[in-house]
Length: 219
Image 1: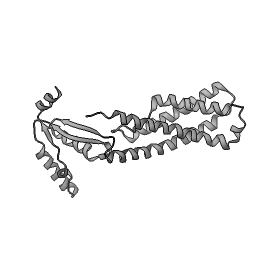
Image 2: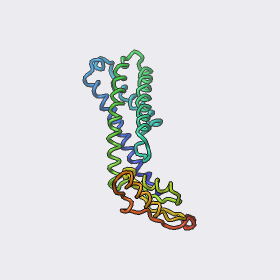
Image 3: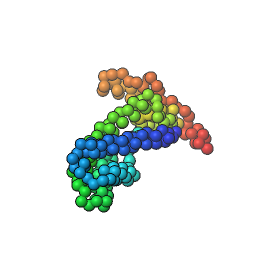
Image 4: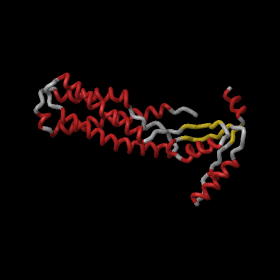
C-alpha cells in the first residue's frame, strides 16, 4: 500500500482549525449579548477566551479528529467528540477558577460546551461527507496491492474497490491461484440472491504474478 500521509495530515489540520474557529464563534455569543459577561471585571473576557482555547489545545492532544482515517466508524468519531468537548469544558472551568474563583462562569461554560458538542457532531458529519466525495472523485487515494489467493481476498477486494469513498485504488494481486473462477461464482451468487447484475466484469481483479514474483520484487 502506497502511503498518503501528507494529504491526510492536511485534512486533519484543516478540521482542527475549524474546531477552534467554531469554539471562538460560540464564545462571541455570550461576549456580545450576555449581561453576566458585561458585568465581569476588566480583562476577564480576554482571559476567558485564552483559557478556552488553551483547554481545546490540550483536549486535542488526547482526542484529536480521526475522520481523515479511512476505515473508521461513526461510533469512534462520536466517542472522540464526547471526549474532546468534555475535556475542553472541564479544563476551561477549572483553569478559569484558578484565575478568578468568584467569577460566575458555570452556566456560560456549560452552555458553550453543550452547543460546541452539538455543532461539532454536525460539523464532523458534513466534513466526513465532503471527504468521501473528495475521495470518490479520485483524490486523497492510496494504491493497494493484495497478496494471496484465498477466497477472503475476493471479499477484501470487493470492500476496497467498490466503496469508492474509502479512497483505495487496487493495482492487482500476487498469488498462486487464478481467482477468475471464484469471481464468476460470486457474480452468479449476486444475480441469484439480489436479482441484479454485478459490476465484477467492469474491472476484474488482475493477477500480477505468483507469490515468488512478489518476494522477488520486494527483494
